[in-house]
Image (cartoon, rainbow, N blue to C red; front, side, top):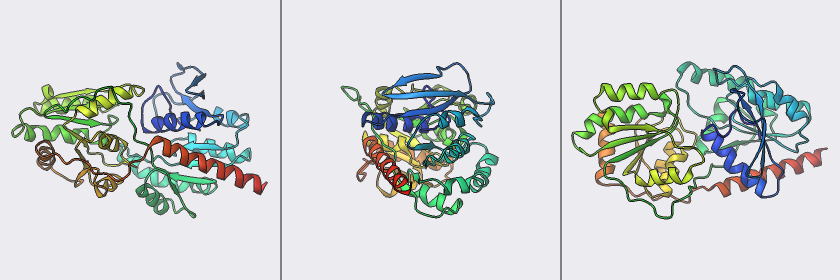
Length: 361
């Protein structure tokens, strides 16, 4: 599996690679996670949960382009049966696909699409996809994590052939005793980027506090938008009601405990390819308010979450949160995805690819 970032860095792709990778390794596959290290401070090689982790230098240190020339050399010497490219956003993806093609190794691509706080970068991704189209067309299989994502890539990238849908899992390691919900506690999980919508919950707080005096907000994540979130909370006079702190990605008990403590979970992101945090909250039976757009709309349709329009005012956000605080909607989701199911789906694709490649050879 080739991914721009991996643990100890946190994020959705990192979690996917960890959860799927360790299950694939436990099933008997010899799995290497090839990733980058812009810091040059992490171990070049280590073992984790049955996976071999290989890190190569990437440039520049201050950007998320992840130009890593050594990726081609590692792939050429890996002796791999399949290369799985995890996410298309950085320079890592074309380097890995080109190396796989050059060494006549079949490759699979999981898109892992996401939003971006920069409008320019968001618009540039359409051009990026079209530029990558020849390499994406050459993939043995292409994987999306939701029906929404599959439809988007079929239309935006103009890809021929089908796209497999293999949802991420939504399992948490539960504490021995789950805590009771804390009255008025709103939890907003996600990386601290503008597009994740944490600021929309902060802006709704003054309106909500006039009707629910005990309301307070816990933002869970790390990222570059944290100083701005603190400034907004202070400017609106609600800094004493807002706590911002991440939870280490390996602390699954800690995350489950916090989500279980929420009276309502808010995910007001501009873009989600699936909405794992919402599904995790649903597993715990917590009321959820989401932006009714992108893949989050599928959760609204399935009864997992209450949706509000993308352009909702702070007053409307406050009203939706108040409704869930006073008359919580217990999620009635259909069958929820699991990491075991995700790993099984990925393994089936690997086996199909290896078999088809062997027959063609």
